[in-house]
Image (cartoon, rainbow, N blue to C red; front, side, top):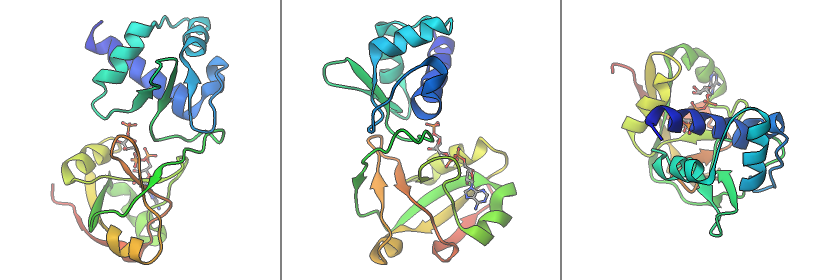
Amino acid sequence: MNTKQLNETSKFLSYVLRHEPHAIGLQLDNEGWADVESLIAGAAKDGRILDIALIQAVVSSSDKKRFSLSDDGLRIRAVQGHSTASVSLQHVEKEPPEFLYHGTATRFLESIRQQGLIAGSRHHVHLSQDITTAITVGQRYGKPVVLKIEALRMHQQGFKFFQAENGVWLTAHVETRFISQHIDDL
Ligand code: HQG
């Protein structure tokens, strides 16, 4: 199995485990878990050949640890990033570090200045612990810009933070007053 095959499968798994399970007739439970056997069968109907070895390779090679398998290996889920309404993952609530970062594209800044950071189609706003990761996230949409979020101050004022299994920080909304500065001369 090569990198291209792993990347393509990872994208497919993100699509069905985060966004459109019904595209292959897959059921996710509240916590986002799907049966691996049903995933393989659903994918096959869609003309996509998956097997356990390929799925395990995608899970273990994912740079951001996007997926996890249950201990018995029978179920799989995406650890964050969902948009499907059938899933409401109970992430661990946690006190965040003083600052967290959000990578975005410069073209979104005007709207972010007005509305703060909103979750859009996903269930949460995604925040990174380090600037390098935030730059990579922002680059997906254009010229990147990194916003610095006063996470601890938000938390002290009652806003909840969660940390996904893979370390990504999540919160419902970030008001403009907590976006203290941005670094746009990258
Ligand atoms: C922007 C990937 C206008 C926001 C990444 C972002 C991450 C606004 C875009 C994870 C806005 C949403 C999530 C506002 C926020 N006005 N635009 N008020 N508030 N935005 O992809 O955080 O590789 O849904 O800045 O690495 O970019 O898939 O969220 O640009 O961890 O595992 O709206 O997805 O992980 O885009 O990325 P997204 P995101 P994976």
